[in-house]
Length: 196
Image 1 (spheres, rainbow, N blue to C red):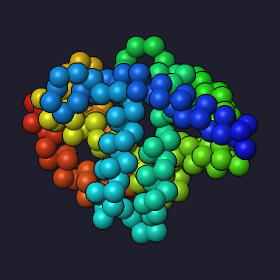
Image 2 (image 1 turned 180 degrees about the vertical axis):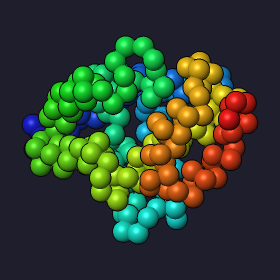
Image 3 (image 1 turned 30 degrees about the horizontal axis):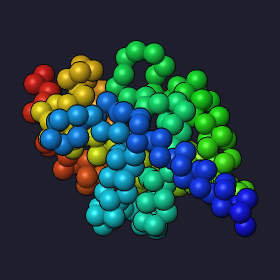
């Protein structure tokens, strides 16, 4: 019992480090950048509130779990902004390998009967193939868009993002799992891209 609790609490204490990972996206009032712990919490809330936009067969409880877990690997890897032009690109093989090593370490802190199912949810999110993962990925992509709208362009300005890049890197993912959300949000995005 003591050894099991030691492992569970070790994982939970390690997870607290996610609050130290600073993302490119500002918080809605523009006063500072969001941290990855805040981001994960906010995404879970987005999923609960926007559940009526999920496709058939999507299990919102599983989506919420994925969203709470999806960025834990950033404890080791850091945040890799989707629009970053420097260093390793978001979604590159090198980043995927680093994240897999981080998942091994972080989920490995837990007893196997707890860690393995959580790791499986993380992998499902990353694979982005199941209906639950597709919706979760849509929510993960739409939240920063709303923050950038609220802050007058936010990280889009910093990274010189074009509407074409936004459509390819974000819009396609949101539209795949929540087409009505992207249709709505896209209407609010256009004003930030004068050349569109």
